[in-house]
Length: 322
Ligand code: NAD
Ligand code: SER
Picture 1: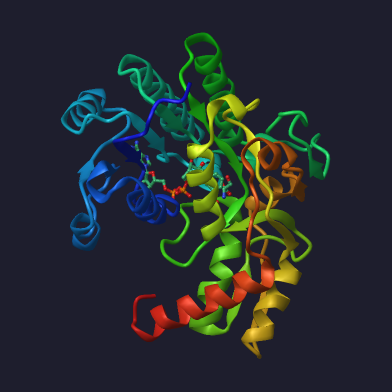
Picture 2: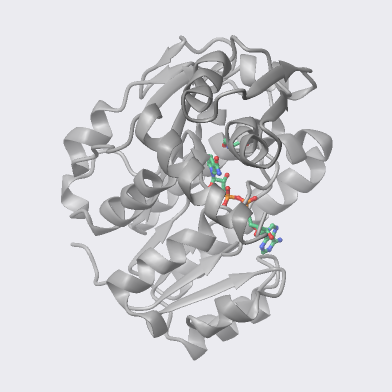
């Protein structure tokens, strides 16, 4: 039986996903019932929209104070180190991603929380995964970020099976958005291309033009979290590891989509260490379980996303915000 979600704490709330998800959660659950947090301080405009507190996810005392002060019954745990930064500093990725998640799960248990949401990633897969990843394809990642995501999924399922803690999560593809730049992942090129197109009408991409990965536009990402969090628990056969598909394209196809709206846009390629990370991930994912168990259905395709991204970023550029 699903407990009601009333008061939510979001960790890592100033990042690419959190900076937009907090607004969506506040629309559904009420501005004062969603507490934003991050290890860094927030802008005044963020603080004016609802409660914000500085929280390092390894600081249990501050975590517990916030849980008690705001009667928190749900944690949306977004604080993490992503794949690019994680490969440069694997010890940091292990420390933040694993200790952060275990702290969140233990607090969820201690305070008998209604729900914990922890995202996973397409990084759970490695070179032995079929190019079209199934829900149950083998999980043999070759990055530390991927190792922490696999261990995180297994840990979440352990807390569900052993203690009945309602933990949920999806394997996000690369998320593309115009609000907050991404925080150091391999799929960042698919965001940078839009910023550089608007600013300079050219982009030097850090992976080859034939690199193909699963991607998703932010409005679909937000919808997925809101919808999965609201799903009846008895409908779920999976919990923390839902494959989530939306669109897949290689960089050349992405660049052609940008060129359609930015004539004269130029792209060249200077692959770096992130090429081998990208090569180790699948091209596409099969998300039948998410569709069947909680009605997942993405809305955007490449063309509608490109139009919306360029429109938003051109306005930001005109206002000197990027
Ligand atoms: P991000 O890097 O943009 O944001 C992460 C936030 O965590 C940052 O604001 C950072 O300051 C904060 N943080 C880092 N260490 C912290 C600590 N010790 N204590 C508190 N806060 C800390 O990441 P994101 O893109 O918003 O990702 C959110 C979640 O979604 C992560 O679990 C990530 O693995 C997952 N995910 C993201 C993508 C994507 O493309 N953005 C894809 C797959 C999965
Ligand atoms: N966007 C993320 C990354 O590249 C995928 O989890 O790290």
